[in-house]
Length: 525
Image (cartoon, rainbow, N blue to C red; front, top):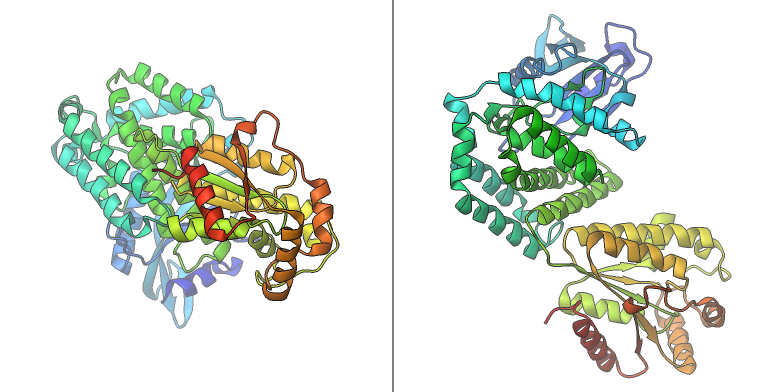
């Protein structure tokens, strides 16, 4: 029986032998999860990623049983049992008498308001929560299995196997979700750390820091009840679960960093070091933070190709991957800044022509406000729209939506290390400010280049465009209205703003733009 049919069955309240008013369905890259109000049922997907193999019913049974046993260490009141799904006379049931077609993990459903990500979103996550976690984790690691075959997972050879696997499995995404420069930097930095810190890895083993840990310690796997409940540990791969306790702790610290709570990340680590006496943890923390961020980026890559997700969800996962890879680059000491050029100005002044040149010659990513505007409004990108100035598709409200989306897409690309050129009017200072802030958040080299030309030249271009270019909505009768609304460079940010006269031949304009970008160190040598 295929997974889709089982998902359909478990999505119906009538499937269950207890009262269920509604079933909420959630899926990850490896599981389909059904929340019934009192109990949660987790169905593993029949996937094989190499590091994880749920491809047969027998393997799914084995991993369901392991999940329950291992998670009872930190969440004994949550994990109830591993239960078979049976098929008898065409009827699918839980723990029935027919053929066993799959297995589920059954758990107690917890209050989602107490989930770490929910507490964070409400702005309530505090040092007290970190203290409570430390109180749980210090004795957990002290009691966790160690020595013997577990110690092997802390060796340079074992950890290098994991990192090399990550790099191998993400090579297909280089140039798409992670720039080649950043990929090579992270890999070289990682391998350099192994070479320079072999003695550190050996000391961690000798001091008993290698344990059978949790393996997936982040805010979405923590419920802040009176005593924190930490659930959903790694059951499917021993080498991901076992290792230096720093691997677990770095994951939560990285997750806090990723969510803008560097203050709590630092506090959490300081409290753990104080309570455990593991002062040397600090020396290896950034290495494992980089590793954890990269793994999250890898998982987002895999999820972005899941056929069960719609295009919007896939795009969100691609953006998430870029953000995680960007964080990994920072932990690896990366300092090369991506470039963001905004080609702005009045309609018909050559913005799009210059943007296409940067894409075709240098491989930059183009974000066109015209294209994005039509994408988010459901209008075909090649459809011309005739509306009065500042109305309909070009109303202030639609402008705000468009520029917000462009800015978000630009930031995600920049976090992946990609150079970005944005093509749009950006006539108002308020439309430019979010771009400036995004550049500052990502450390991007920013340049606003206003394209200009004489009024007669602009008119001729717009008239020609109306005859031949079916995609642009710029029209002669709108150009003077736009000119009146056009605002000067943003106060306090004038250093980012430059002007290029595009009146001459295209090749001359392109050469001037390239010279400006090189002079401002946004193009390279």
